[in-house]
Image 1 (cartoon, rainbow, N blue to C red):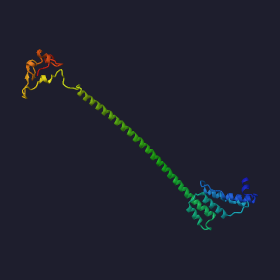
Image 2: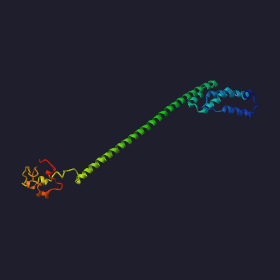
Image 3: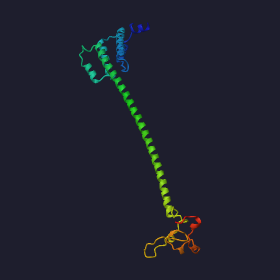
Image 4: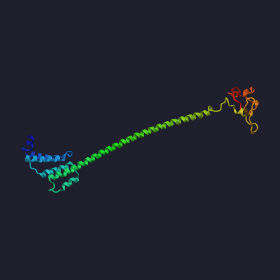
Length: 246
């Protein structure tokens, strides 16, 4: 009842109030995020309310006001707006305006939805690429760490080998390396005292005392107690050790 009285019953208004009411109604902007058909319906009802209040208006005036709001919305391209403006006055009817801009609005919505979906796909692709890049970076870091560990292990092994080699070399230089057994091998002077015949080849002869084939003379054999002072440190008698004479 109240709505009927407000919209259908004539309301006593001053000229200023009528002017402001009309200007406010026709000047109300359209929110492009809302349905354009709902805007046209609301504008059509407003035009009816003007007649109920005794305010003069026309369909052409309503059509012109709606066209102005289409410009202000910036929902449509300049080419689309110019195409509407190029229509003749006879073609720019209230119904034609609704049909034209509803069609363009639906096209814009479809384009916006397609663009939004494409943007979602693009964002998903970028996210996948970023995730793949992070995984590649992690794998590279792991491989680098493994490579560094292998290099350290190889360096440690090489260092140990070098240390062992230097230790052997130092032992050889210091005379502590593995050499002749001084307790069983006599010095060269006793085994082969040299060639006193100016290079003439000498033959080994069996010594009657040590019973070995040697170069020394029987009188120089260390088995004789007379030659005890000539024996080297660690000398052992072959007879006492049970060594088989050769």
